[in-house]
Length: 232
Length: 112
Image (cartoon, rainbow over all chains, first blue to last red; front, side, top):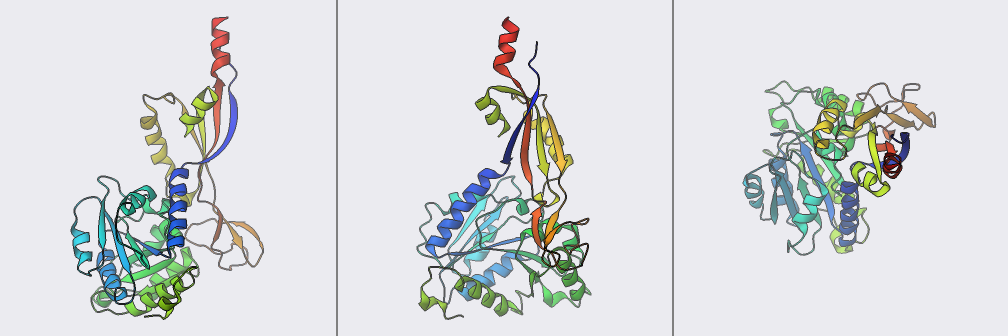
């Protein structure tokens, strides 16, 4: 004879483990004065090209490094290394997103010294990365002018999890009849008040504004060396 | 997680209840499909996954109250139209309950 079934009340977040590691990472970054920016986008939106430029410009005044996630190959790490910043590749195998534990593992044993900025380039994917906190301070979602103005409406979850939208390849806007106002309206529909920048990593259009935004946000960060707060 | 709970409490799990929000990034159908596969060969084999889909609830700064959104493509207060991006509910991916049977009692009843 079976005992009577009963309902046990529990409240357990399924991603609790990831969230705990992310919280530890975030505390560690804050203590070390590292401002961490993560990048998400669909494959081919231009994360690596954008990041290469960010690293190249920031390197002049700040200590920067990058982690880059891909299913396979070291190609992106090789490209980013051209910026002369320290770069480490995370190969996820078949996994379509980065998790906090992977970031933690990649950082452990990486002798890069003190940092001002760390960038984390996620695997190209607009779905799964939205569920995983990586301990970052700022999450950028990138989308290129070739992807369609309704992308935010199709992938509202990732836009909701991000802090800033970066419209990439703006130099191609005319060729693809890109409707910038339309895209910006869709971004505001799914995430009112979201900061949005239009850039071209090819022509450097708009990059200075984004850099200044990073520097400003970092200066709001506690425990910083005042000498480094002078801007770009 | 449910397995740990089952072991800790020495119970058999008939069903796992889960709250799922549209902003969790997880789709109910995909979860139901993979649940059966993930449970095969574990003490949870044969158990059910009961998903309660949680609507998106935001805080409207103008109405100063919680509002339920009807669309995840429009984060504005449905009453006054003010931008409302402070999400209160909708990101859930949370186990809320377990339907269990007491293992020890079952064993005792069985041996009696």
